[in-house]
Amino acid sequence: MGSDSTRPPDAPPPDHKVLREAALAHLARFSTTRQGLEQVLLRRVARWEQAALKAGAEQEDVRATAAALRPVVAAVVESMAGLGAVDDAAFAHARARRLVRSGRSGRAVQAHLAARGVEADVREAVLQEVVEGFSPAEVELSSALVLARKRRLGPFAGAPSLRPPRAAAPEEEGSRGSPEEAEQRRAMGVLARAGFGRDIAQKVLEMDLVEAQEWMERLRAES
Image (cartoon, rainbow, N blue to C red):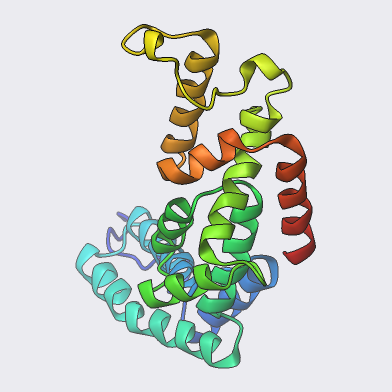
């Protein structure tokens, strides 16, 4: 007797209870956004879908069941948000603070949060208050200094000869420049690729070590 090519999969599709348990298990281990949690649960549905198709279940039925589970996933995410287990603003604030302390520019922080589904107004609000007592411009400067320290740029270069000159001599204009100028161009490029504006980069590269360390201490104290 031949096997039934349309037999149901061994595991039933995840229902509201199963998806809710999966959500709680994930949130117990990770901080995430509403979008992030939704993606986790949709992957759970997708795994069931793949297993069901591999087991020989009817494709049309499997696809219909998976589609019907999307609003269930949305309902679970909504319930987690209602419980306060998912809070996009809290996630954004904590993640932005961590990114700033690691040397990420405001532009990079914005992109990171946007990719995780944080709404634009929440992102803007977070960047206004990510470090207590710091204006957005001061946050940006501090972040750039963190990156400069990591990459040994400007005041953290470790050798006076590597610090950028205040201004090029007239006779040097149009030439390839000195090693100091080459280092300045390299440092400006590093900061620009990280998303920092030219004005912030220039301030960082012209800052002396004592002032730079004071900014680092203030950042640590406030965040």
